[in-house]
Image 1 (cartoon, helix red, strand yellow):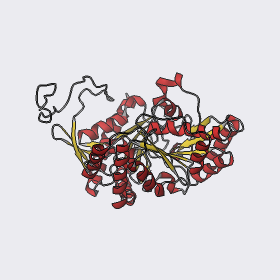
Image 2: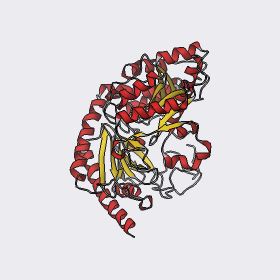
Image 3: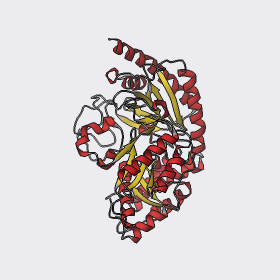
Length: 467
């Protein structure tokens, strides 16, 4: 057996419990990250045998659970037959079958699927597709895209420019600025100074209409938003009637409606897609994360037949990635889709989400530092505040969110954090997005550990404010 760099046979040497920073450019500055070695259900184990309950589903990605052997088998079987064929030269049976099988679940009329490798690629694809649609229609002046503050659409430059998440934008502001932004649909902080948030449907629709008119007649190509905002605003649900009103404004002005369902898709909010809560259809829909439950880098853009056909008739789509239309990715997505359907996991997400919120309210209702518990399905957010009555946030220097995440991890529970909710700098939140197969006992443990972590961290944050 070929030895590894330590001179021991590959597959036999046990990894150390932590690895010092080496050749990997890590995403974390923590020099002592645990080494993950296996996972099953809602749990990840490190090399020391310690278990971590994955209350965040990674980055709200893992929906069908860790360690699904049927997904690994589908991946291996497809790779054994055909691992790669360039999308400009071939199509494949898994790709064609997946597009047909996902079609009934998509809130898009007669959709066509453009597969890519993840959410940021899918957003870039949607942007270009919107532009290509208007070019094919002879509307060359339509290039403006409007997004919202308090949004997240990815980290590639076009996606980051759309995103209204100020902490992520700041280092790269010199490269940004081509797109426009309107207020977040964020009832909890509606009208607060610096929050760029509104909570009234009529105000939000009127603001979008003003932005379209201000950009100039026939210049706006698309409006993009998350149906329910993910990590940036911790599962903020828009006011009732918001999405139908926004869709009507877009239709009236010939503006394409792009739904960013990267986090809300595939049952995460208790419906197949977030827009399903309001019966709205998108012109273009962007999906990733739960499409393959983290087992393969995969996402897609779903375009209505009207968008697709016009682009094709106009000469085609000038766009592409090396790993788009990936045959193994499609095989994995098909198996994940089969599991969601056969195990009725969308309904499971809705029921367990209700259970999770009930447990959270029981545990945290009397905590003065919990401003709001919100969300749909198994995408649930907790906003932490220094003053419940005024919604005043903890200062960033208190690092309350980080303290909650650290305390929970020390007790074996993984959480997903958010900062800058109040004004782009201050404001703390926790987002929960466990796998849909999470058990009732695991939900109870998540809430108990989270409650203890919040109690400890907010007390420490108050001390920092008083110092």
